[in-house]
Image (cartoon, rainbow, N blue to C red; front, side, top):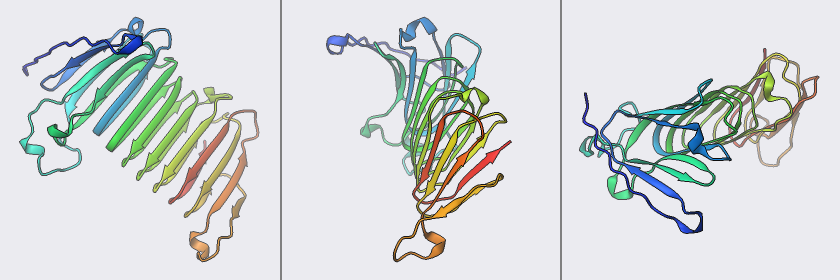
Length: 264
């Protein structure tokens, strides 16, 4: 059984009187955040520097998390010189609760895997990867925002509004029928975007790639945008697809990569 050392520091931040609990722990670390602690906004945020984040929606009412050292993460010369502890803290404000794993520069490179289970009907979820790693979110019906710098993003069985901004990584997103009229934006820089639509999802898709192809398992009309000085293979392409039923505007854009649209 690994040793667990925990210290709590309460801070008051400005007029909001925010409380921050700081924990330094040997891995693995697990914990529970009660739904009642999320406040009226019921927002949950994950902020991590390196590694992997896996978030799964469940029928439970509380949030549970587990943090482990990511031995499969990005390699770095100083990795073996670091302690086994992964510094993180839980921050509570009037807008919700956050797990933040952002070590100071003096702590060097730390990669971790964060596994989180949250109520699938939580109103708001935000996940941010600051330096490099992968993000997975599945079975979530609330409003989702993902920012991933230097890593792949995989989303499955989503039923709420979605905004994804990815840099140097691909996006794969699967949408449920419950998406209804909630907007979806999948924006990638240097990475392809794959959209998987459940049967019955309606709406309109606006897809564009500045350098790549727009492909689908259903008939679509792809317009090639002329641009001087570029060969036909690398010219921008744009497609607008009506899904034949009322629904949201689904916006897809990538600067460098293919757009693939799949309808079940």
